[in-house]
Image (tube, rainbow, N blue to C red; front, side):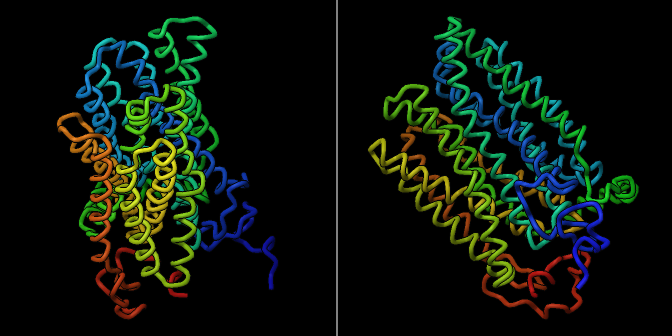
Length: 466
């Protein structure tokens, strides 16, 4: 057998590649170019966006006192932080198809970094809500991250690559819960600044981090394994871009996965928004302790979302698409049950323990969802990724608006339990997914290699049927 070093597809990478130059193995601690470098740039850039978006909730006790925010103001700001991401994710998907993930990612980060900095200068509840709206646009970089991974890695490892990239990036939502209160405390207790000046000065950190990571993506990233973005741009003419968009929007699988993602990742985003304040108010812990507890929810992403990707790929190799779908349904249902339980626990340590179990399940479900997404449509991958990603932020808006906006008389713990019921119900439509060459949860494929009307979707299920 010819040695790997002599294989023509491995001339520029230490990884094993397929004929499309996509890596067939995933080494998260490697910096091999261009595949692993793209991986690290993608997750670090998205990490900074999560850090920025969720840098406000851990400082809410100080901010709401200074700006005289009501519960309704805080709820409206939380909703606003996700509304912007809905539309920006939809737009970013086709932008990745047209311009590539590198430029798209950098532009999103650079355009939203000033909004992060603007928090230091707000003085009214309305300006607070607007700032959160604009910062939320940065979460569109989730789509560029997943698109980039799908451009670099083959079907054998795409779920793991997507899961690890998004999982490590999501840790930013936990790190910021821990770091921002520490920065605030340092400025108050060591530098002896006032509380108002301290929380404002703290926002220079996420704004700077987001700007630096965007410039790194521009300077060191490559859009594709072979760097042939110019050819891709020629093929993606405006007329063809419209066809790509329509092709993605008419695929019902993308809509169902968007709904699924709405109540796993969307619920995760909502929890990131409310969990620190929940522990601060219900169990009377201080701001630093509440931030540390909330940080543990985000830190679980280091292993939970990647584990979802690992399980998806393992079940895909063993059982095909049926294995991917059943594992997604099972983990998402478990997440809903644990969420119901979280709202019914009355002790501090019991709540922390159940919260950690919930975080693992709901984040793993997100990884499992994007273990299916790359197989829906190769031609409209950016559109499908955008639809699914927008579903996540739409779910955050819905749950925040219905349950945590301050417009109802329910306690936060009751709202958390109701959110768990919504997660369980949202997993049911997965039973409707069917792929002609791979089947569904209950149905076998209709002849693995038979020509069908879905052939123009360029499904890559041959790998799953080996």
